Length: 390
Image (cartoon, rainbow, N blue to C red; front, side):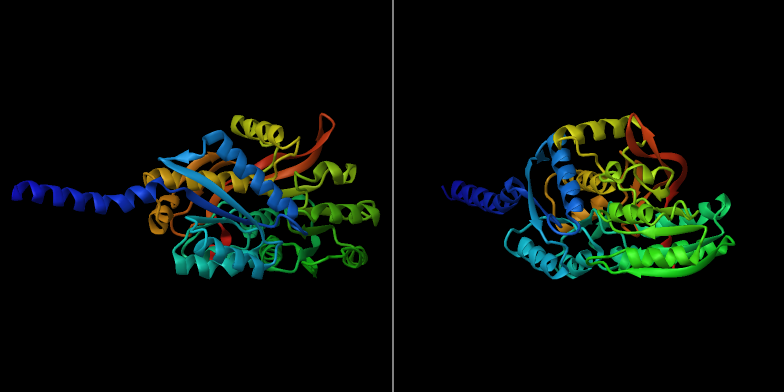
């Protein structure tokens, strides 16, 4: 009798220990997606949410036995709001992963919370080089401005551009773009005549473009955040700068795929360097673009969309690797070193820096079937973030 009671007691103890683990694995796996859904950067939020939902529709909402739940919050691009929302997601919603981060200040505001709570933070948009240094729990699936700016600093002097004025939005990624383009352009024998910075909030490009016209450089190099490119292009053409012989060269944010058709023929011939174009010639990208447009009333995916799509892939694969158990450190370890084909080409999440390594393309705006596209004409393979070498 005593032996039977002992066996029963041991069985109950084993069940008691197993129960919390089983409960944890059966509980939803929550992803807190914090994005600018309204305000100046709303196009970023719209693209990333659409891409995240597309990935879930294509790959199911259950991974390794865990139901995946996406919780979307609008931070309106205000870092204080981002921080408050992230804290609520960690404490109240008990999310397993934080993601999104439309602009650099939002990512920086959230970084300490990710570190304190050991919650992986997948940055799908913000592109300042130093972001991944702000927390050991940050993994990036977007890009960095040094990655794409250095490429233009190499290309321009070899293609008739001897003098430039730089025009960037005055915050982290703009400062990176200015610095890394200017250094490489100067190293290659070019001359930077002036460096202009435009406010992030409510920018008016007109007075800055007038300064450029007065300086008469061979080209104007521009970085503005996603969503602001159309305004630059419109004012560049209105001021007749193209007719004055000043070329526009830029990072791909300016000829954003989401807005490109609205820019008109004034954008034709603009050369940019970037990591993704909706026109990228691969079977996977064609499938991605078709599915994205079908799911979103014809909206064309841009580089923010692909950052969100790949971010979801990194999260899903990490959850599979942990066999559904999750846990901040285990998920983080499973995100590091992932290599996969993206709609943009092959990418790697560098295990040391937790930053993305990817191809950077030279593109020219051309008309195809009555629509404007960033058509790739050259590629630099497997580019690491140059900012990590400094």
